[in-house]
Length: 247
Image (cartoon, rainbow, N blue to C red):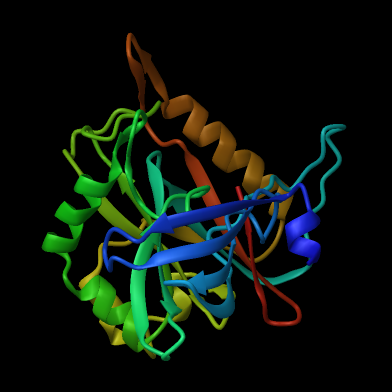
């Protein structure tokens, strides 16, 4: 009832293009970990309530006044931030307990063709290239990918026509970068991943500023975009052994 009354959640009723199910529920617009999350109420008209956390809205480690707010971390992993469209692969249940794998962008419950790009057909192409994706989700955990390349243009220009790169998995709702899972889940080797740039174990602010300066110095502006790296995503393992993402 709180979700139904909240302005941060909007109602949807859409057919899953991959499985043909009519799915009804709510999608979150709340910034933070709940961004793009789904609360499914019904599948094919039958009640089967379930919540699914997806790709969070990332924040910077400083506020508008320029004050730094780095959480205490036991380790930090630095990954390249790719400039494309986020595709989240997730599973949901029907009232009979059957499990389905579906795919969504940040603020839609399912992939579709839109004025922003033919995301559904491009992703089907990627599934043809990496058929292990739905198998992995069924066996293990939900997955967050970036769909990027020259055929899905944004600000950064790429020579690669089209690619899907794994960003992280959500294990029981918690975010885990690939390096935190690959030792126990060798299946992750099937998938291209965002580039691991390095790690940080001290002087967070200095390292962050150095990364900014390095990327800015290599970024080149062209008539229709930029050549270089959009940014980095930092995965901080907090002292209570949780992963937190910053951009």
